[in-house]
Image (cartoon, rainbow over all chains, first blue to last red; front, side, top):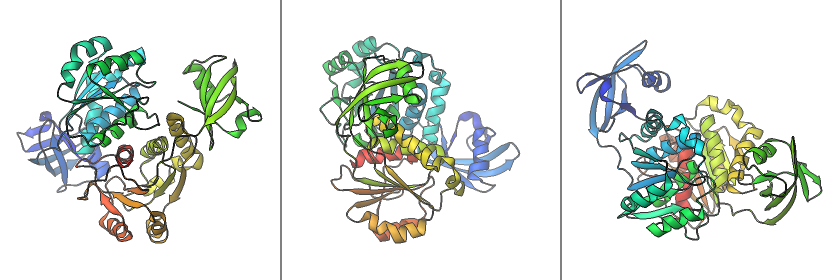
Length: 236
Length: 236
């Protein structure tokens, strides 16, 4: 936790003093081992980054005087579309995407997505948010990504995707493609990553017809939670 | 598991028939849901890749006739030096590095490595191997990385590191550096990744004096298991 992420509920004095008694308090006490007078990096969710000076640290709660004087780091100009991965891989992928600066994520269906994945409690908004907060805390960011679920592939592709990719370089990670993933692009990207087992030919065709370029990252098939940081680091 | 990794012990008939009754058997039965006559991708640990045709699948064991006709994918020209991360991060970092084609890994001490990490059972050779096998199975590779432990920073840097980095581009991931990590390098790399909390100035100085260039990956501080794939994908 490189940043203590604050929400309006944490304030006991408008704008300057917060009181924490949840896992953030425990973290500051046990991991940072901070004391009264110490300064910690803080950020206001959806807002700016700054410092919090601990004014009180008792059994069960800490209070800090906070000020916000910096913008969060810039976002990546990418829309990430993931074929819904298994729950534990989804958790890590959300965390990583959020840490790396992705601000818009679609979780979509695809032929090789196990139907049961759509029933996972990890997809509940509060659980999705939890993972993304971990990513923001890691990367000292405050802006939560927007996550949207699209449990039907065909209407998503036919009705929505053409609009989404307008003005962007649309890439579909597909290990069988002959085209290597471009490096250091200078325009917004829509990046689609298929499921374990890959996209089926029908899906590749639909995407290509829309304007997606299938691209590969080498001969090695990577798990989605590895492909996400690898592709983002290569593109940006 | 995109590859069933075989070892000499699995062979019941020299060179052509294997018998599996461990987790690989369970995986083939329950995840691949394969049956007699089906072909699966197999690899001989340290050797070539090929196909195995299931000849028998009973309660408790499967047998396959195997042939090996392809080389494993090329390795990355990199030596990876990690300040020993927390055990769960270490596991994922080993898995990812192994999947991406790293073949030489040093786990080293550094001022901000928690001493207790050196006592983790995850460092036992069989546990380290377990993680790397997962990476190879994912990436359809057969060549295990060599992993070496260096629980003392100073002698490692003073006695060994100059030799290791000879003929390579030596880079130390250091978020505070003004130099961005290079892209698509065409020479072997020695890549050092510091601990959570970063390298201390003394360590940066020692490394710089040896010929390391401190490099950053942007403003965001990434966790080691995210930094590993991000840096490797950017460098190669």
